[in-house]
Image 1 (cartoon, rainbow over the protein chains, first blue to last red):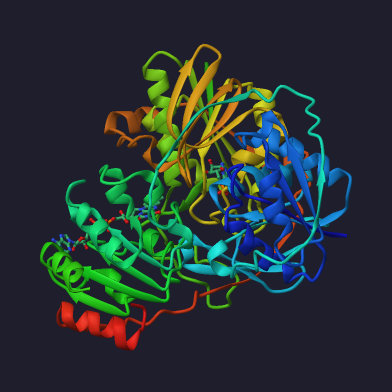
Image 2: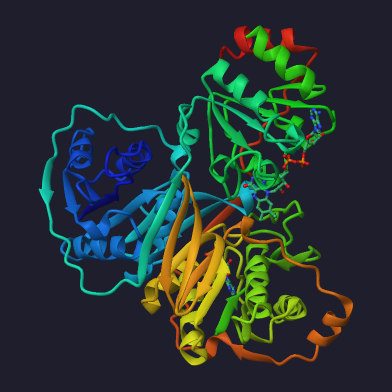
Length: 312
Length: 254
Ligand SMILES: Cc1cc2nc3c(=O)[nH]c(=O)nc-3n(C[C@H](O)[C@H](O)[C@H](O)COP(=O)(O)OP(=O)(O)OC[C@H]3O[C@@H](n4cnc5c(N)ncnc54)[C@H](O)[C@@H]3O)c2cc1C
Ligand SMILES: Nc1ncnc2c1ncn2[C@@H]1O[C@H](COP(=O)(O)O)[C@@H](O)[C@H]1O
């Protein structure tokens, strides 16, 4: 009958990724419901209800859903899905959606379509494969289409002005899920969130140390940009894991992406090559990153970064 | 404790892949193939658990063509005890054999083998699906801990640190459980020559995917595989001033 979007949130705020999924969902031209699962998530449900063109919002609030563990979220989703005949079940292709949706897909006995970047028709989709080296077009024969959406490929839906009704539903757990939450270490930052940022400054192995990475921070702060990194920089401990951009990190597509001391491995490009304007700073004029950069500056980052930050 | 490690044979991550001229898939002939990097990490983690005395047996399994036994031998050279090859003629990268089917086949093997822990990759670098572990967990009704960067087993449970978008999350799962690996979990070892020789003698079972009672009709039809939109290289600028000028006046992004 319609579409179910599973909201991503932290019990306080709806994550902007949900808005991008709603835009992708609109392409099917059918009624869109949103499911919010968490603890005391009434506020988030209200935010979901004020997105434009939403049919209804389910608010499922329970202590067992608080930490968004995959097993109880699966049970909660199945509860909603069983009572309705959804044709599409969608979530962002974030670690939240990737952790949850394949479970729902397996229980419904359908093949999930991961990381959709384009809705071609009601049943066919485009998705990047091989680390973005190719784009596959696939057609689904399943009755229910379970889809994770690459958020950078769709604009955010209008977050205000909608007046969907919020229905509270009880969570009826039936089993011992076998997993318990221990702790969450959230990297605190005043800077914009990486995935949605309009500008990103990323540093690579060439920064050489955590202390030197401060030069990236200074430039980012001057530009009001989020900070990203290559895997090599994360592995070396210069920055936390959630800064990683790439095939196995975050996918970003800002207005401006500045890659500093990053060689441009396929796996890194997979996460940033859809940025509008790409700047590369690298001392090796043959570095692969220059093949996709709009503006390349060959030179030593230790000279260039301070000068650039100062002159901006 | 018995550990079960599903591994996939994929085009080596260093290879720049070529799309077939008829856009039906990716060229697989004369291309260097390797064990999926995340699965190599899964094997390494299992071997470390065995070396620390926590695990007793490591079984590696792959679903793929005859040649996929190469990756089983690699895993056995790293320290796995035995291998299971489930053969299929169908394409396993983007084509006919899909994560749902793989998960169902693995479920059936796991019901026979009864491991205490399944460690697998979070993602195959060909289809980039990131689904199989989560599907398997749901089908078996076992708890999952995906994207692991640290694994500590103690008694009948495992504590796992997970790499998630917001930072690091720690979960405790009761065994039997399904874990999927992220890149920073460990650094896989190189197999030594004597171990490569020894691995040749380790037991390897061969089964056919067709003998599993699965519905193998693909749910997704691959319509075409195309080049991504090409991004042209831009220009090199002389210095910082020229860069700022371009960003301000040409790209208009600052
Ligand atoms: C399965 C898999 C998944 C992966 N996923 C990701 C991913 O998601 N994201 C990711 O980034 N990587 C990923 N990688 C790793 C990737 O292959 C590369 O190893 C990594 O991106 C390299 O990081 P880098 O460019 O910082 O380092 P390097 O490749 O070492 O490049 C450093 C660059 O800095 C330049 N340089 C050195 N000194 C200076 C200086 N003083 N001034 C200016 N320039 C300088 C050098 O010329 C060089 O180009 C993955 C790998 C695998 C196998
Ligand atoms: N053909 C296969 N044989 C064995 N294991 C597989 C196969 N395909 C996928 N897997 C496992 O499932 C993980 C995730 O793959 P995917 O869901 O395809 O991204 C891989 O890292 C492997 O551990």
